[in-house]
Image 1 (cartoon, rainbow, N blue to C red):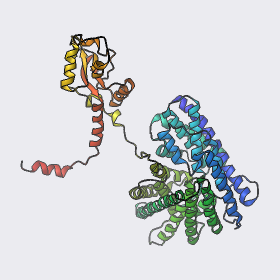
Image 2 (cartoon, one colour; image 1 turned 180 degrees about the horizontal axis):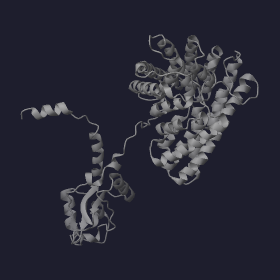
Image 3 (tube, one colour; image 1 turned 45 degrees about the horizontal axis):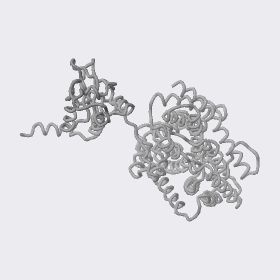
Length: 572
């Protein structure tokens, strides 16, 4: 724990530095490419001069990203599925080049007009830093996974100043574990990175929301309806992206050209609606502040969605969060304007926009809790918590019903990898050996002849017998394998000649998980259960499976009180 915590400090500092470099590099390249000036401040595309050079700049960026993808294929897309795959199948090992290639390719893609946010690339960059540190320093694969997740959380916390959401997102999408061992380093890394965000970008909320009042239960039905609409929007966003990605995969051209082809698509849309280009944080602020007319909101939502679909499907390096926030925020603001005309509704379009952002992002990614916390931290708007919670869970329920995969897992499913989505208490560590062990034990005495034991193996079908002495104490165990090994013994020799005397055992109060660990470590099939020097049972792999059966039984529907009473009163 102390080692991981110390490494988390370094990861937090590195993640904060990486976020600072990425944001400023995006700003510099954007200013150079489109405004022909040197500036480290993210510019607005609202009043960008429409020129065919927009397409030329975007295509140039696409060609560069396509070339970089040959060197580091992980840079394609937003990269979070690849980080999940590294955790699940590669012992959390990410190639060191990713820590350089991902932020650089993302800066080039976004700096030349790509309609992405910086969150996906910085999460992957931070994760690569944590993974690299876990490869240099001797740690276990499980500990390396924690370092990878801590780096991802640090990158997100440093970019948005949202340390709590960063921790929750890492748990929901990357860690596949909830434990003190994992939580402490995550919190340390994200806290330090969030502190660096304050130094670099200030301490205020990233987005301002006009003051509003939540009336309580009377307004919740409106937000429930909004959650339903956002769930459907999330399905459209995800499935539309999957369809266009399939279209790119069917194209008879090399993957190298895909980002350039995508650049032609999103840049052409940008010629008509320049607001869709770049990260779009200023556009999100305008949506939340209520500064855009309904017609502008509709055009912005549709144009951003189409541009982002084409860009991300082409394999260009970029994130998912900022585009989804802008699309769903515009959608929510439109619905908010409509709801404001309902007598007695007393709702704000800005609040609808904020709630729609959380609901749609949570439903699209299946990171439900993270999206609620994230939007709260970005705006510091406590009055929106209840609507956020209700709409987000409804949207997630709708999306889960209509889609098998989220935007984070679809690519992995196509590769044959199923990603776990739920956490459960491990039944193996909450069940005692005494609850599953076999208590009807057949034993053999030390002096029993080997030939007699061989006959018992043939007739009874057991795989092993505990060996006991005159006092009934277990002093060894003999298995079928012991008799099959070559040895200098005969059928008339006592079983003590071949029995394993280096006894490995458990007690009835040990957990089944501990028993399974011992079976795997010692590569054995049977564990005598010994309490107070007395043999009380035997535990096998089959016995351990009984714990899993108990877990399965707990998921089955029980009859309920009325049905039980009816059965009791029925005549026999």
